[in-house]
Structure formats: structure tokens, C-alpha cells
Image (tube, rainbow, N blue to C red; front, side, top):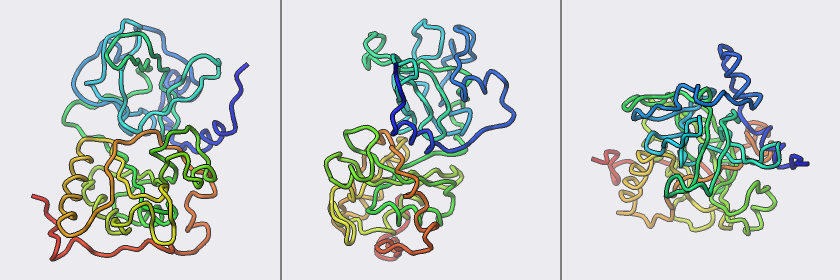
Length: 307
């Protein structure tokens, strides 16, 4: 019989508590009790308009219409997800792999491989009631981007002060093992970078957050930040949308005219939240960051406009 590991219990505790009190009984049962809507009954089963699908619980983007296909299974099917948006975990039946929102933990459905429906050979079988569709041209109210810039305590502390930031969470990304612990990442063998999830209001241009990222750390240092050495302290922007990627590349190119920029720009992968004692570290301790502070670099020498 399948039993949840300690790391899965940790993930459950790390999910953000978001719940709309106006949800229907079916929505509650599916998203929070892991029930399944009846096949061929969902609003988005046979629905193929252009746009994006956000989590009905927290509002963050999960899927894109270009990744949706008709499988005939009775539920909406996707062969890919928005980078960093969906978490895979063992289902309690011990057989299937469950899909949940990587931010709030709302149940989405299950993922299957080896069926041959598309070239990606992957089918996300998702409940319609876990999703909300936004037509092409309508922006979600919030999005997320992930930043690695040395010790995540200081990076999180400074981003919590940044205009437009709705939430932050420290964790790990960019490695090759699942459910890494802080101690494992510190060995340098898992490949992860200490990373901060930044959830932001889309009324704020993500370009401002990317510039802020470059201003709060030394982006010329390779695999280190101040006194902290190791690949886990490398500088990375993990993007979740094409807009984020393009703006990050433009800003990096601009900075490269004057600096040797060590920052890499990579597609977001699975984000593994760090242990609770790492979250909001400086709020808990009352101390201040030892190697992160903001300094203006987008001034006379480097124009703010990228046009």
C-alpha cells in the first residue's frame, strides 16, 4: 500500500492556503478532496478557443490553448503545462501520478505517458472545474517568475519590499532530484539553485522586477554571491512566459554592454519549496541580509528604456 513520504507531507504544508468561499460543492470536492467530475460533462472538454487556463483556486496560469488536444478521454487534455506551474506527485492509489497546482496545491487531475496522442507523448487529464479560461488578449491578474541570486533569505527579503509583489516563497529549482532538502542542496550534488518564487500583480510590468533582480545582487559573480560559494548560489532567471524570457534577454544584453553578466536565463522547471524555517527568515529573526542590498544600475550609463 502506498504511503506518503515525509517530503510529500512537507509539500502539502508548503502549499499556499487560498480558497474562494463561493466555490460550488463540486468545485470544492474536486480541488480540495481530489474527486473527479463526470467524463464528457466538463465545460472545457470540447472547447478549443485561444487563450490560457488559470487555476480556479489561486488564479495563476497553468495551461495554454496551444497545448490542448482532443483525446476522447472525457476530460480536457494538454500535452504540456506553463513552466513551473504544475506539480506531479504520487496519487494515494499508489498507481497514478496526480497533478496539482504548484502554488496552492489544488487538485487538477492526473498525467499519463506512453499513449502516443501527440509528439510529446504526454496527456494531462484535467478537471474542467479546476480551471478558469481567459480568452486571448486578457491577462491573468497575477503571474509568477523565479529568481536565483545567492542565499534565498536575502533575495526573498528584498523582493517582499518590491512594488507589485503579491507573495514570495523560497525553495529550489534547476536540479535533477525530486524533493531536495536544504542539506542535500548544500552538498552541491543535486544541481539545484536556491530560488525565490515571486508572485506579482500583472498591472506591474515584469520588466521592473527583472531590473530589480539585477540591482539586488552581483550578477557578475559565477556560482557564488558574496561569502556563499557553490553552484546552488548561481544567478538565474527562471521564466514562465515568453514575455518574461524576452524581457530578461533584452535587459541582460543591455547590461552586457558594460558588465560580464553571469546570469543565465532558463525555462522554469519544478519548484521545490524549502523547509518552513527558511521562509520569511529575516522577518522571523529581525536581522538584515548580509550580502544583498539594492544599488541603482539603471541610470545615466545604462538607460532604463530598452526600445
